Image 1 (spheres, rainbow, N blue to C red):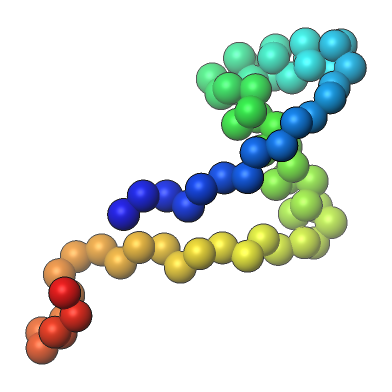
Image 2 (tube, one colour):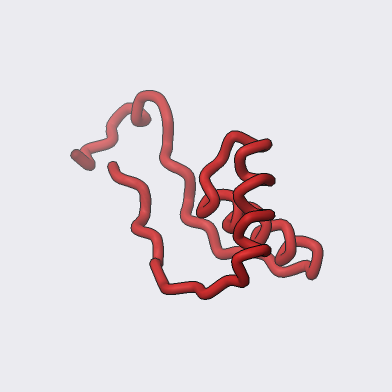
Length: 69
């Protein structure tokens, strides 16, 4: 099962802001894209906004008698 597709869109940033993001991302061993996503999630959480998340994949054996294949 592949992870859900991500939405892509163009984003224009001030070069100084992008440079700061690069430094923070490098310190956290992330890409700039991943760092922006983390920062956005943190900002939303501080505002009390919950994200709609997909149900996590089930792990382990299916229950006995399960005919879904």
